Image (cartoon, one colour):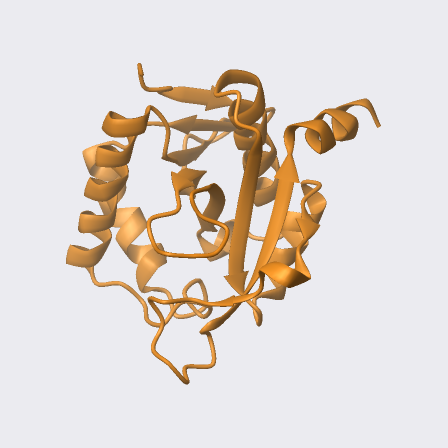
Length: 189
């Protein structure tokens, strides 16, 4: 599949990663507030490795986590996109939607706007039948974004994330879902 290199929303460009994104991306991944619902912040090397994996996902599947850029300033603000779930879970195989934004860009609706743009890509361009999202049960801000973009909480889908250590408070995860029909209804409504 030819990679989908760029998407646009009213205020954002979702684009391929540039080498000079690493400085800002590493900074946001090192921010303890941004990473509070992950087991640990990332080092610069770990952030660079993540960008490498994202680029590989694009090459293999044609979609992935796009770098987010504000149209008004050209500022890099984080990432949002679609990934194949790559661990064993009852709901897999599946495509997940996820996001991570720098703290100074929180509360402005960018996460929901970018995620909505990714859902449009998932259903209108990629013709997926369903998209999932999951996060630590403690991560209420991300759950609010999931709800804002029309996803439905699936209480039966709650799971212990296999990549988080047993007993860690972030291991319990919640699952949200949206299918193409619900997304189309949201467009009409």
